[in-house]
Length: 332
Image (tube, rainbow, N blue to C red; front, side, top):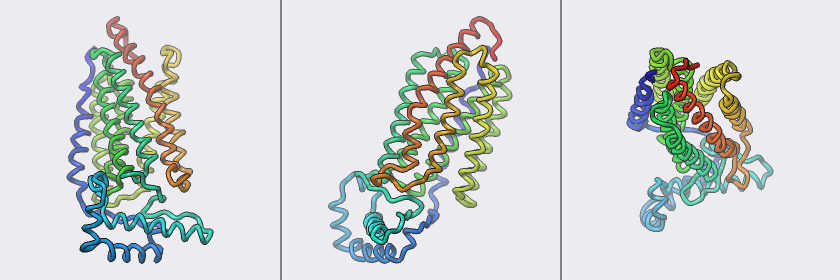
């Protein structure tokens, strides 16, 4: 049985991601929060920039700045914002008020050049887990398996997303934020494509090709709206949640249909349920513990073990498909 052209959809997605690097070099949108709207914060920033970010003071700052800070784009103004953020937080706490957000984010203690150390570490761990399991998959599954190339492409799309997640949590800029958000969307969309190939495309390759094209058009429309019309965080979350729900239901239906014939079906069902349940951690949204660990970091840390279970399913299923193809058995 010939496998469908596995890299067509993923190759187009990756080309779109590369083109986004050019598209996203636009003037950044401004995010406002309670903390950065405070007069004490604004006055502090203006005074700091006026005093430290011109002339000899600026040259002294640049000469004393560690290379890793300069390489990641930290400027004198950024350092003023960081110092004034903690000045404002201290005043809030002294008056008994709850900790505010600044520029759309909670205040985090910066470690070296990492703005959000725990989230950056968690993203890196997810990427390493994905890479490790991809290598294990490629060593355990022959290339002749019908799903081999589609799963490899899915892994590369996932690695790309975790790379940008790590970069974004290391240094939050307009470009890194958008790449983090958009690449996360590609993982959800490609998971739907992966599910389509597994459930329908092995018998009807044309169906998976049509679905792949539709998913590319959906991704292009999504990115175009957020880039050229309005970057609406609520819309982005709702869109990803809706697509994720389709992915969840599709995989669960397949698991239910194959529960009696595939002994490993529970691994797939557990993974999709776990991922959606763990995503609820985002709703907690509390100020970071010890100014490092917030709900987003906890969510990312909790997903690291899921990679091992998911690839265990993918390995077993790919070997099953290979054996059934050799035996000439109809694939379900």
